[in-house]
Amino acid sequence: MTERLPKYSPRIEHYTAHRIDNPYPRGHLPWQVYHTVRNAVVKCCRRFGPTGPMAEAPITGDAEEPLDGWELGDNPCEYFVLDDQLNDEQYIYIELYHARYFTEDWLRALMTTLREFPGWGVGLRAFEAGYILVFADRLMVTGPNFEQCTDIACVVRMGQANMLRVEF
Image (cartoon, rainbow, N blue to C red; front, side, top):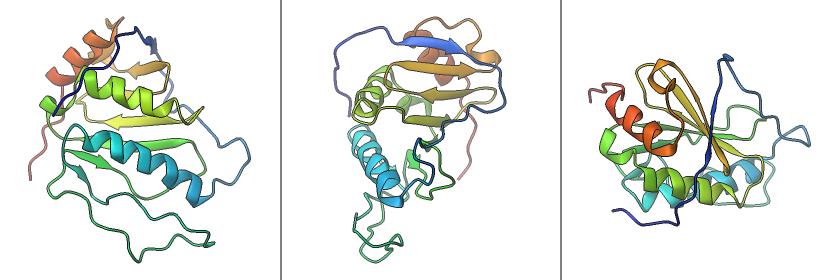
């Protein structure tokens, strides 16, 4: 399933650092904040294909993240949106399994979704030699696959050509 979004030219930034820190500005990142952003990313991904391993998380006022009532996502999934909060950074992580799901429309929709959450980014693990950080206003790319990319179409073309080979 695809959808057409308004065309704009997001900035493509190349980086070489091993990691790009993106700490939550108030220190400790509450699980409710993390999962509110994750839920929006899950909704976005589901418009383009099967998404899992978990569906949207129920948000409560509990101090601890409740696991009761959290439904499973699609199985199998093409967009694996990590459900564990790994740290106090403003990142959601996605593993992507097949080139046909890595599209310009999906990237643009993801960027549009992130506009609701200033400072947040999505890390994409899907490529033989490279990595992408998606923000509302830019794509940050690293690795030889993306060295020559100056626009989103090139990022998608090179990403599709260099997807990790995943065996199930």
